[in-house]
Length: 407
Image (tube, rainbow, N blue to C red):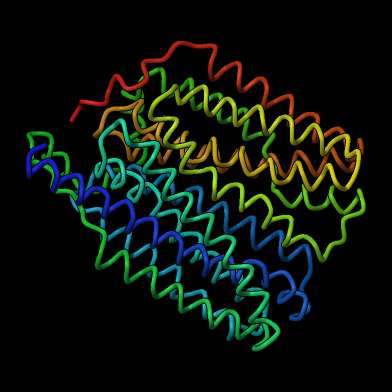
């Protein structure tokens, strides 16, 4: 191995770990605030209706921000400022929750937080893809996801301890500490790979284009990308909020106070499984690994539909973390390697947008089915959609990796 090659691999590894540590601190801050927010809203005189409105608007704006940032990512030379700005804005507004006096102020803060998250997502994932070789994409995304989900474990635990000492407003202020650390790591340790300027760089001079112009070029994305997108979208229509799992667990007899522990159980599995799943996807078919995750999801939702016992719910919730580990990092790697390098941002933006919108629709569908037909039916429908998505994902030939050398 040449010195230049070794230096390049060291730089790539540093970048992946820098993004991972950034994700850990950022998710710790986010989860500290997230688990306290429902009770805080109640203390302000708000309720489920206001919470639903806040989260619905926040996630919707995040979806559109992901789509926009995906297109923008392919048009700019330097992506790091956009990523750092996204982390900075999100973590600057979280401590402001300690100062609010009305629920609509929380709406503004969550709106800004989710907007910043949507903007930084695609450029960050493209920077990760540019930092590693194609045969290490899954490992890179998996490692970062492990750091991220580890933050989802530490955050609620920290909130639980701090709330008893300093109250809910104190927790929001304390979330600023890991938030600042996330921004500092991204600012000083993430390195952007220098890209050669080619004749195609003239596109940058055209500046901001309207979405109508961009859509004219959407057909340049390969058919294999759309096959993956259709399968993931169909699955997402059955992938409702995890809060429905918590609600079902309460129906079976698990106390509401145990809800954070339910989340902790699957996040532990998620954290431990993400990097190995990503590594396996670098050595075996990414489609089949993601399909295995979908089958696990189908099994989990089938068991929740039957809800035979509380012990079955606890065991199944732990298994649920494997679904996340086998799909979240692996599908991102699959999308990235399916398209040309110059269209990675666009592909990720479309992928994030479509799955986010479908997931929002899934929660509405699940709520309606539950209200009219009882708790079992929506879980069975979700399991069935997951199985159909598996057939779509693995049943059609694709040219995985055919664009891995395109610059």
